[in-house]
Length: 323
Image (cartoon, rainbow, N blue to C red; front, side, top):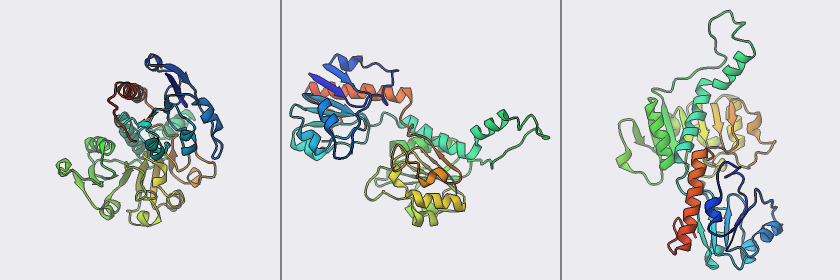
């Protein structure tokens, strides 16, 4: 049985073993598979005669799937699976699986880390000390940026699923009040410090807004000129969910005007980021290269779940099927 991993490097740059997959078939792992719209020849060449494919971000379009007659199983090495034409997979009887819930803890940890960096400015102050600004200072301490205490402030969480709830628990431990918007609210989660709210209330009352919702048509561009206008001055925004949740030109304008005090983003609309992205020149904007999923522990869980998905498929009891 031929197994092909099209883009294994981001999952496993060398610190995890492929051995469990190797035991299940003839395994070929490509670090990356380059592709261009309208030219998918390399993808089709690499999956030729493969029965099993794993992909993280390499797209599998109708054209690719229709030219893979032996293909039986696609394992998406991520939670989101929009890179696969699932309807075509269904038509062709190809099972498509994803990896849910492998990175909940680290995504929440990263969201809070991004927020704390905006509040504490740890790295810029460390660099200031290294430049000699403390040793030559007439005072015993100094700060170059406003320092913000989160206790007593309100965090608005848009999307209160597993990750949103994990972020909320950490924020509550810091003394924050939580307002949440979710398409399927669970009243049992409410407490004196956590309440569901409508979107306008969340926007108006939140000191920090965290995006943890999926990317759907009704959430695309949810942070835009109109929603920002409803926010309180000095709000902070964190997005480590999906880049297109934000209209980047509108956020850049709000950062430069001071309406939004800071933004910390682990995702952008086009990845890798394009150098003409307006957020690169915006004031008080932290951008990291989509690393919220990538702790070693989370990647090991991802690998374990990917192998289990294939094992269960081969045993006739497929799990985490999205096709």
